Image 1 (cartoon, rainbow, N blue to C red):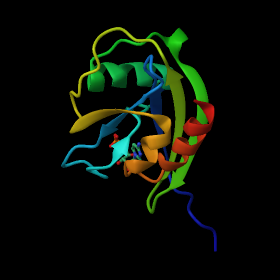
Image 2 (cartoon, protein in one colour; image 1 turned 120 degrees about the vertical axis):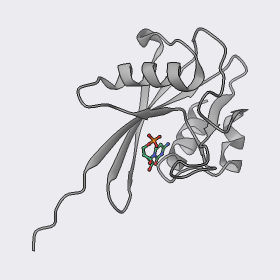
Image 3 (cartoon, protein in one colour; image 1 turned 90 degrees about the vertical axis):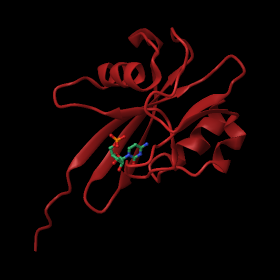
Length: 137
Ligand code: C5P
């Protein structure tokens, strides 16, 4: 029997890193899947959209900040097989942006030292990123 492959959902995410080496995470709001869990900001790539353009758009919409593409350093890919789709999520690093980070769509924001990130419950796709960031930063 041949299995039907699950669709792949491409989500981009970013680790914004402040001058003290802390990383921004954002709490998913009520009414969304995985509500209450903490994620690296980002979102779904639209059909035909480049991942970096999607991330810049999502950061503007979600956090009210402007990021230039040259400041986005691709880091690692996370992936997770959910029941109905595969999530593929490249994580970028970013240390420079314009504007004040504001929770426009999330239930809360936290600037967290890499070694403390594991104190925050995250979606399964985001979890492996924590260990990578801890080793890097
Ligand atoms: O953020 P958004 O709801 O648009 O993401 C689409 C889907 O990708 C979510 O419903 C969730 O299942 C998954 N997701 C995830 N981890 C994230 C962001 C999204 O598993 N950090």
